[in-house]
Length: 288
Image (cartoon, rainbow, N blue to C red; front, top):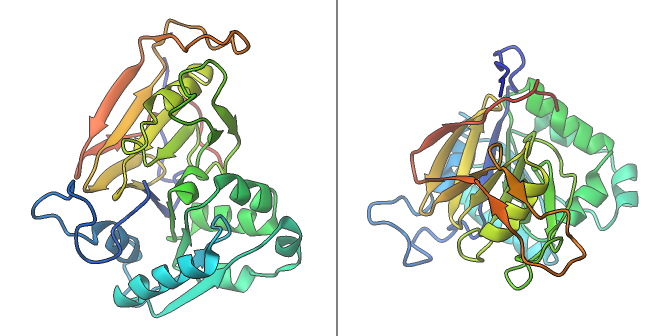
């Protein structure tokens, strides 16, 4: 299969931090999986350090969360502790509020945009097609901004984006539902809490139905740093699992009303740990 070279002129100037959820905010290990010698705040420290500023301005977007005030309070505390000079809070109940809310100056000033967890469908249904999302994408392309997301906030970076399917029904053909995410990562589907919530099969279904895409499953307290739109570096205490369906030869994904379990042959799987570097294959010209 042919590949396109992503030139520096086409590469986004911004960086993404894609977090698997439950990142450590306490300065001490939250789980027994934390490896000896790890920096317990590595994931959130990276969000700050990637700005290359001593006192960055951060906007925390909690629209996905059902407890947005509590969620903002958590990130306000930790980002202030890590050196942020200003931490703003963006929240919208519905799409109508976004269409009336002029946030251009705040988005332009921000060094970091941080999308919290919750419900990824709230993010895409409220922000999709808005001037706010267009500005976010424009800044990602042209400016050295850091755009970070955790849990549902990270899943919204996808194209395609998972909206349903759990460990109880993921093995049934057609049980996993998808829509279009923010498309900050082209032809990439991100899933979070990946090992902890046993989400391998649901991601495999997505890749079988979209074999031109790559599935990236990120464990808790683990993140991907994406630079130049193509280079991925893993940080944190867990693993990242990459599922590649380019070589699949057969599946039964079209039998979605049969009640059968999924069957897919020849998926390619890679498991990456802290410090691993991986290049996203550019199978078609990059655009946002």
